[in-house]
Image (cartoon, rainbow, N blue to C red; front, side, top):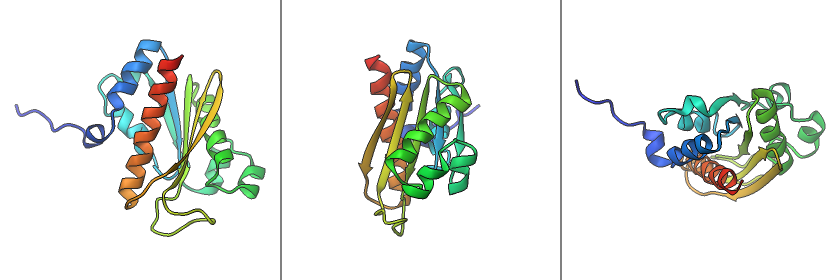
Amino acid sequence: MPSEPGDPLTSLVPAADLVAALKSAGQTVATAESLTAGLLAATIAGIPGASTVLRGGLIVYATELKHDLAGVSADTLATDGPVAASTAQQLAVGARVRCGADWGIGLTGVAGPDPQDGREVGTVFLGIAGAEGTEVIRLKLSGDRWTIRVGAVRAAVAELVRSVRSG
């Protein structure tokens, strides 16, 4: 029987490193994704054995779902907007809490082709929530929509690996 082709997402992003780091630490992750629309969770799930570390994810593409599903405050969305550091921070916390994970990742940004709410194409906010608190990283990515979305996933995986390994 011919072997199945590899998962194309895992060939672009070192998700195997993340799954291994989480397994080694006995920890789990959940996502709340806007611009990536589940791409991060799907990439992690492409690694055999991911079911032991991936709790789940929230796709919160629509602004109101950031509030309704992930718990981003209505005040934050009204004041800072859907593409903001404060929104990414609350998405990460919401993913962690609502999915019962050790780590939560929140991703929001503008993949293009047009700016959104005064934010340039390629602006991405990555939130990482863990037991010790939440970190938000602002990314400036370039390329087409696919390249920006994959770049956001790649950054999220790399930053979470760093966080998990640093303790």
